[in-house]
Length: 252
Image (cartoon, rainbow, N blue to C red; front, side, top):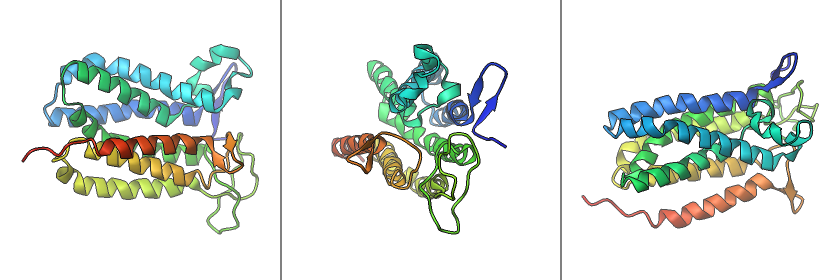
């Protein structure tokens, strides 16, 4: 059976892209519950929710298209709208949402770090779900391996017929480890608003950077070995390390 897409008479639905997009709605519901528990402004959240989601979908699709221009090969520019067909970039959506949230929260004088910190647990859970989608669909697969735990895909889009590294399962284990550590320490980090946000995004980017070393799916490669996604990861990691020093300690 092909788990990479559902085929209909006139179009296909990319399973990984569609489920990743839907995960944002699940994560948003989880986030809403955490905002409610923290007694933050739920009316503000409800008023801005759809614009955040739409910008997230736009950002996720934009990065997916930049990393894979072949998306436009069959249908031209209109293919940009078909995020359920040719993929969706998780990090593109996250960055777009955070930037717009920062703008909206800052304009209203709201504590944006507190809002961001509460988002991190839904983000981690969402990332683990995306790992599962990548494993099931074969949208993300590793380099060829002789190790006994290698997996073999028989689905569209996987160019390697021999067993490959199950990179999404590696990532899932690392994300789950951070999930446990985060849950244990979240109440301690509250003294420094923004710490949960910066540490979580930094850890997720480091995991992503490491996992790309095992990836086998096609992408742009720089200097023969460096994937374009790793360049983005390094840029964001550098920005976070610089920005983390700017987060002040909360007064006791």
